Length: 169
Image 1 (cartoon, one colour):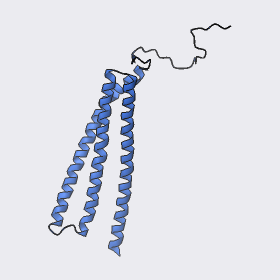
Image 2 (spheres, one colour):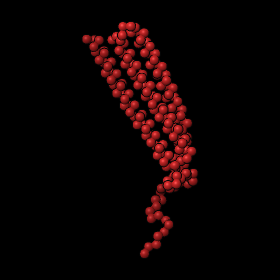
Image 3 (cartoon, one colour):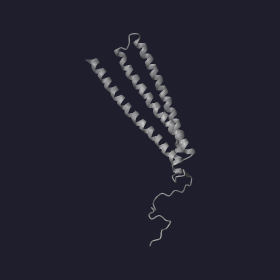
Image 4 (cartoon, helix red, strand yellow):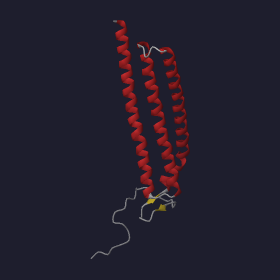
């Protein structure tokens, strides 16, 4: 009969061996090695910076939206919405969607950076799962916003073509 040894039966000699001992265990045997925590620690400040820049850009776009609405109200006067004001409405729709497209991912990125800090204070596998879920939420929203913006731009192009076509004939 074969004696059992403490060595594993199959061991890949070419596998990367971890030499770092900076590991936090959550009690369940699963750990978060330094290869995971270090890149997160380095990228966290950049996420905060990009989030703040995105929010500042969204605020500027909202100012342009308000300025455009005030310009439209001044042009229309008391007569209501005229046909020549319609392109300004479309542009303001684009400004509003652009402000949302900048603000929502910025807020989600800020939350993701907060989750990184929460994870780095006590790196457990449950916190890593929550961190990855937060990252997935950011990318899901970002992808949806990009698809929505592409749709809006296609509709805006079609609207512009239709307005040009009706003016010529």
